[in-house]
Image (cartoon, rainbow, N blue to C red):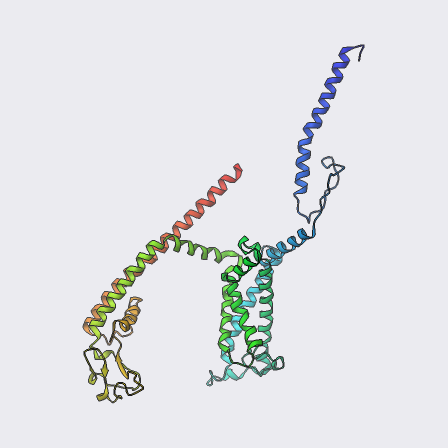
Amino acid sequence: FDKDPTHSFAAFFLVAAWLGSVRSSAVPLTMTITMLHQQDDDASSPLPSESTPLVSPKPSTTTPSTKNDDKRISLFLFLEAQTPNGLHYESFTILLILLSVLTFILGSLFLPQYNSNSNIAYKCGSTCDAIWFGNYPDNSLQSLGIGATSLIEIFIVGVFTMDYLLRFYTADLIHVKYTGITGRIKFLFSFFSLVDLASTVPFYVDSFLLPNTDLAASNFLRMFRLLRMLKMEGRYDLALGMIDDVIYEQRGVLGTALFVGMTVWGVLSSFFYLAERKNSDMIYCYWCEDVDTSVCTMDEFGFVDCTEAGCPPPGDDDGQEVCWNVYQSIVLSSFWTLMELFGEFPLVDQHSMWGKVLGTITAVFACAVFALPVGIFASGFEAQITARRRKEGEGGESSPMA
């Protein structure tokens, strides 16, 4: 190169061009490595290629805590039906819920003490009761010593108990507020947690804490399992959340409508009291039947005496009233007035002329009073739906720019 400067310049430009090509290829190389490191842990490592370095400064490793988190996330997605197997499990739990409620309803048909006139009450024997209904503690499962139960109920409670424990384990993945011991305590008092507890805990109380007592009424809590279906795929959860939003946003107007309704209720109750407190047709006698209330007398305070009609004197039966007028006070009148505001007129034949006039006025006011909250909720739902659609539209328009 010393003999010919032209050769020196040519060599310089060749080296510069080569260095420039290497530098330009460094950007996509870095991006490729970054994208490879962002792949899921389950994905297989890429084979060496032109875009993969031959020597990696620090190979990627998966710590045991990361594996544990991955398992918890997979479990959470399974419980929330976000995987194919999770969808099958959700359908299975729906089937169990319907089976549990159906056996509870049909089991009431096989109780002779309540269906003595029905032949079907005696069709389910000890084995049948042990499999399906669990009405009697002396069925074929008597040897377990856990009271009246059935194989179906034991299996369903076992599945739902395991489901609840796993949901409790992954509760922090639902929301960050459920993280830690304090967060788990908050989760215990959440709506769906209380539903799960109400539908499973009574079984353990009846079976292990109080096995020899008759707590058949606690079996009714199985019906709470229907509420578990509200969280399936989040369809109803969104609707329930919208109801909360509507109530919160329209709380001022709803408070005004409630005040108007209470005022109308109180005023009409007072008018019914004035119109019917002396009406003998409104007299009701609990302790005697077929009473001719026309011969009953009432004092200025509204107390009824039907001694001449064959009833015991007032106060003879442990100081209790034998007969009374259902409109003898504004408090008693408010119950019947509320029924008429809801469109029911159970005492229409016993009403006096003024009572029927008030009944007509009540029907008119009822339409106006109950139309207020209906309109408020309708406008509130429309506003919430419009706001959510606008928010989704803004998110969709901004995503391409991002």
